[in-house]
Amino acid sequence: GDAGAVVSNDEALLEKVRALGNYGSDYKYHHIYKGNNSRLDELQAAFLAAKLPHLERMNAERRRIAGMYLQGIRNPEIILPYVMEDVVPVWHIFGIRCDRRAELEKFLNDAGIGTNKHYPIPMHLQPCYQGLGFRQGDFPIAEEISATQLSLPMYYGMTEEQIQYVIGKVNEFR
View 1 (spheres, rainbow, N blue to C red):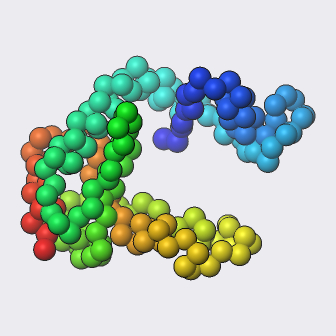
View 2: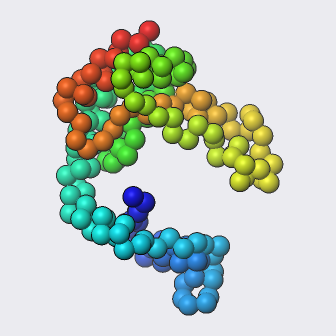
Protein backbone atom coordinates (compact mmCIF):
# COMPACT_ATOMS: atom_id res chain seq x y z
CA GLY A 1 0.00 0.00 0.00
CA ASP A 2 0.91 3.63 -0.03
CA ALA A 3 2.51 5.00 3.09
CA GLY A 4 5.64 6.77 4.07
CA ALA A 5 7.57 8.40 6.83
CA VAL A 6 10.06 11.19 7.31
CA VAL A 7 12.67 10.83 10.01
CA SER A 8 14.90 13.73 10.93
CA ASN A 9 16.55 15.46 13.83
CA ASP A 10 15.80 18.81 12.16
CA GLU A 11 12.68 20.10 13.91
CA ALA A 12 12.09 22.85 11.32
CA LEU A 13 12.10 20.28 8.53
CA LEU A 14 9.70 18.04 10.44
CA GLU A 15 7.31 20.95 11.05
CA LYS A 16 7.33 21.75 7.33
CA VAL A 17 6.69 18.11 6.37
CA ARG A 18 3.80 17.89 8.84
CA ALA A 19 2.27 21.05 7.39
CA LEU A 20 2.70 19.88 3.78
CA GLY A 21 0.90 16.64 4.63
CA ASN A 22 -1.96 18.54 6.26
CA TYR A 23 -3.14 20.78 3.42
CA GLY A 24 -0.12 23.06 3.97
CA SER A 25 -1.47 24.06 7.36
CA ASP A 26 0.69 24.55 10.42
CA TYR A 27 -2.45 24.90 12.53
CA LYS A 28 -6.15 24.71 11.79
CA TYR A 29 -7.25 27.00 8.94
CA HIS A 30 -3.78 28.58 8.66
CA HIS A 31 -2.10 27.51 5.41
CA ILE A 32 1.53 28.49 4.98
CA TYR A 33 2.26 26.16 2.02
CA LYS A 34 0.46 24.69 -0.95
CA GLY A 35 -0.11 21.26 0.50
CA ASN A 36 -2.33 18.23 0.27
CA ASN A 37 -4.00 15.63 2.40
CA SER A 38 -1.49 12.86 2.95
CA ARG A 39 -3.07 11.10 5.88
CA LEU A 40 -3.19 7.32 5.94
CA ASP A 41 -6.43 5.43 6.04
CA GLU A 42 -6.81 2.94 8.89
CA LEU A 43 -6.00 -0.11 6.76
CA GLN A 44 -2.75 1.36 5.43
CA ALA A 45 -1.82 2.46 8.95
CA ALA A 46 -2.38 -1.10 10.21
CA PHE A 47 -0.10 -2.51 7.49
CA LEU A 48 2.55 0.06 8.36
CA ALA A 49 2.28 -0.68 12.09
CA ALA A 50 2.71 -4.41 11.39
CA LYS A 51 5.71 -3.92 9.11
CA LEU A 52 7.54 -1.15 10.95
CA PRO A 53 9.14 -3.43 13.60
CA HIS A 54 10.77 -5.38 10.73
CA LEU A 55 12.05 -2.34 8.84
CA GLU A 56 15.72 -2.54 9.85
CA ARG A 57 15.91 -6.25 9.04
CA MET A 58 14.25 -5.68 5.66
CA ASN A 59 16.56 -2.75 4.88
CA ALA A 60 19.61 -4.81 5.88
CA GLU A 61 18.48 -7.53 3.48
CA ARG A 62 18.15 -5.02 0.65
CA ARG A 63 21.65 -3.73 1.44
CA ARG A 64 22.97 -7.30 1.30
CA ILE A 65 21.34 -7.91 -2.11
CA ALA A 66 22.69 -4.60 -3.41
CA GLY A 67 26.15 -5.54 -2.15
CA MET A 68 25.96 -8.81 -4.06
CA TYR A 69 24.92 -6.94 -7.22
CA LEU A 70 27.71 -4.39 -6.77
CA GLN A 71 30.31 -7.12 -6.26
CA GLY A 72 28.99 -9.57 -8.83
CA ILE A 73 28.01 -7.49 -11.85
CA ARG A 74 31.09 -7.15 -14.03
CA ASN A 75 29.80 -6.17 -17.44
CA PRO A 76 31.54 -3.23 -19.15
CA GLU A 77 28.20 -2.22 -20.74
CA ILE A 78 26.68 -1.63 -17.30
CA ILE A 79 27.12 1.45 -15.12
CA LEU A 80 26.51 0.50 -11.50
CA PRO A 81 25.23 2.92 -8.88
CA TYR A 82 27.90 4.80 -6.97
CA VAL A 83 27.68 4.85 -3.20
CA MET A 84 29.54 7.63 -1.39
CA GLU A 85 31.45 6.90 1.78
CA ASP A 86 29.47 7.25 5.02
CA VAL A 87 26.18 6.76 3.13
CA VAL A 88 23.92 3.81 3.96
CA PRO A 89 21.33 3.48 1.19
CA VAL A 90 18.04 1.69 1.70
CA TRP A 91 17.95 0.47 -1.93
CA HIS A 92 14.24 0.79 -2.60
CA ILE A 93 15.35 0.17 -6.20
CA PHE A 94 18.62 -1.04 -7.71
CA GLY A 95 19.03 1.09 -10.78
CA ILE A 96 21.77 0.37 -13.28
CA ARG A 97 22.49 2.23 -16.49
CA CYS A 98 23.12 0.94 -19.99
CA ASP A 99 23.33 2.81 -23.29
CA ARG A 100 21.50 -0.14 -24.89
CA ARG A 101 18.74 -0.19 -22.28
CA ALA A 102 15.98 -1.50 -24.57
CA GLU A 103 18.13 -4.44 -25.67
CA LEU A 104 19.17 -5.21 -22.09
CA GLU A 105 15.58 -4.98 -20.91
CA LYS A 106 14.42 -7.43 -23.59
CA PHE A 107 17.33 -9.78 -22.87
CA LEU A 108 16.55 -9.88 -19.14
CA ASN A 109 12.77 -10.10 -19.65
CA ASP A 110 13.25 -12.99 -22.10
CA ALA A 111 15.27 -14.71 -19.37
CA GLY A 112 12.36 -14.32 -16.94
CA ILE A 113 13.85 -11.38 -15.05
CA GLY A 114 11.44 -8.53 -14.44
CA THR A 115 12.82 -5.02 -14.82
CA ASN A 116 11.44 -1.54 -14.56
CA LYS A 117 12.32 1.86 -15.95
CA HIS A 118 11.99 4.20 -12.99
CA TYR A 119 11.56 7.83 -13.88
CA PRO A 120 11.62 7.38 -17.69
CA ILE A 121 10.65 11.01 -18.26
CA PRO A 122 12.91 13.58 -16.61
CA MET A 123 11.11 15.92 -14.23
CA HIS A 124 11.68 19.04 -16.32
CA LEU A 125 9.88 17.39 -19.26
CA GLN A 126 6.85 16.23 -17.26
CA PRO A 127 3.56 17.82 -18.38
CA CYS A 128 2.92 19.27 -14.92
CA TYR A 129 6.08 21.39 -15.21
CA GLN A 130 5.49 22.48 -18.80
CA GLY A 131 4.70 25.99 -17.59
CA LEU A 132 8.28 26.42 -16.38
CA GLY A 133 9.45 26.57 -19.99
CA PHE A 134 12.14 23.89 -19.88
CA ARG A 135 12.88 22.03 -23.09
CA GLN A 136 14.67 18.90 -24.24
CA GLY A 137 18.39 19.53 -23.83
CA ASP A 138 18.13 21.92 -20.87
CA PHE A 139 19.25 19.23 -18.40
CA PRO A 140 21.33 16.76 -20.44
CA ILE A 141 22.55 14.69 -17.48
CA ALA A 142 19.01 14.12 -16.19
CA GLU A 143 17.91 13.24 -19.73
CA GLU A 144 20.77 10.77 -20.19
CA ILE A 145 20.08 9.05 -16.88
CA SER A 146 16.39 8.91 -17.68
CA ALA A 147 17.12 7.29 -21.06
CA THR A 148 19.60 4.70 -19.75
CA GLN A 149 18.31 3.69 -16.28
CA LEU A 150 16.93 0.18 -15.70
CA SER A 151 15.95 -1.26 -12.32
CA LEU A 152 16.87 -4.83 -11.47
CA PRO A 153 14.80 -6.97 -9.10
CA MET A 154 15.24 -5.73 -5.54
CA TYR A 155 12.94 -7.00 -2.84
CA TYR A 156 13.00 -8.53 0.58
CA GLY A 157 12.85 -12.29 0.24
CA MET A 158 14.96 -12.77 -2.89
CA THR A 159 16.78 -16.10 -2.73
CA GLU A 160 20.51 -16.56 -3.29
CA GLU A 161 19.66 -18.47 -6.44
CA GLN A 162 17.54 -15.60 -7.79
CA ILE A 163 20.22 -13.02 -7.01
CA GLN A 164 22.95 -15.08 -8.67
CA TYR A 165 20.71 -15.71 -11.68
CA VAL A 166 20.18 -11.96 -12.17
CA ILE A 167 23.92 -11.30 -11.79
CA GLY A 168 24.76 -14.05 -14.26
CA LYS A 169 22.30 -12.85 -16.88
CA VAL A 170 23.40 -9.21 -16.57
CA ASN A 171 27.00 -10.35 -17.03
CA GLU A 172 26.02 -12.44 -20.10
CA PHE A 173 24.51 -9.46 -21.91
CA ARG A 174 26.57 -8.34 -24.92
